[in-house]
Structure formats: C-alpha cells, structure tokens
Length: 249
Image (cartoon, rainbow, N blue to C red; front, side, top):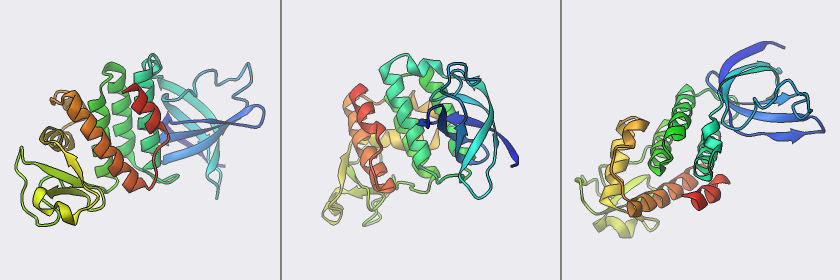
C-alpha cells in the first residue's frame, strides 16, 4: 500500500469496533479522505488528543487500492484550533464550516481552494466570533463549487440592479430578481440592500476584509436565512450542524 502525505483538517469522526475510529479529513492534496485510526480509543493510544475536530496537521496514511477507507500511519499536529472549543458560538460555527466544506466535494475529489478557504476561516474564527465570517465563507464556497449567485442583474429581465435597489433572490434561478419580475420567481426571498452590498464585497475581497464590512443584526439575520435556503437548494439537503449554529448565533 503506497504512503500519501498531505496537510489535513479533521472534519469529523466516529467509532469503529471497540478500539478504533474512522476519521474524515479535508486534505490539501486529495480533498476529502476517510481513514482508520487503529487503537485510537485505547487509554494509551499513540494518537492522544491529536485527532480532535478542527485539528490541522500533517497526515501520513496508507492508501488502500480500490477503496475509499485508508489507514492512518501518522498525524502530526500543526494547529489544534483549541480556541474553537472554548465557547459554544465558535464551536457551532466551526462545526458548520467543516461540515459545509465536507459536503461540497465527493470523497477524494481534490480541491485545494476549499482546503485553503477552510483553513483560513478556522484561523480567523479563533480570533473573531463573528457571523459575518460564516456568511463570507458560504458565498465564497458556493462560488468555488460552481453555484455563483448573480448579484448584479435580474435573472428574468436582465436589468442592472444598482446599489441600494430593492430586490430579492431566487435560489432556483441562482440570483437576483427585480421587484417587477417577482411573479416569475415564486421561490424568491427578500434581501435587504445592506445584505446585498455585503455579499458583493465578500465575493471579491478576502475573508478578513468581510469583517470590516458593516452589517447590522437584522441584516445579518436576513442574509443568514437567504444563504441557508440557497445552500439547501444547491446541496439538496439541510446540513445537520445548521440547527446547532442557529441556536448559538
């Protein structure tokens, strides 16, 4: 069995038998990878607490041919992101980020851009427990996986929607609909001009830059609902961590 080495983030884990655990990672080279940690649940396990959720490390594993479940040889911690477990707000948002990243690719579908986005988002979340960071992550992830929301023109009549114009978003159409065309987009959701401005800036700036974009609480809530529906439509399911994150936001 050939050895593979790559940076990886722990995005989950569940027990296998009496002593082992299956750990899903989001890796830099290979995308989402699942691997068995033999003896991880034993008192004197060589892994200790290294395979905790969110941990960034250097993963070495034996690649099983023709299988999607591999065997961990070594996992060296680079950054545990311990601050994400310090309070419920960070824990809820962090759990959502790793679940969303994992849901965005099939097993062993390489996507370095998503890995880097997730790594940067977890790094910032330790410093800033801010819902704007999550919203920026969502819109950027949707762009990476090919669900680029149209944020400048009405998708029905193609008219340009200037800054401050009232509008709505249709998840099935994939973006904005002007007020005149709302009857032709029955699934539309209202989006405030402030929320739309934030989306536009978040799409073109970095994650940290989005934290400087003004967005008051009512507009944060509006944007959260809009993106939740868009993500559910794109992935065809509601992520399990959404309910927990909603409780702590």
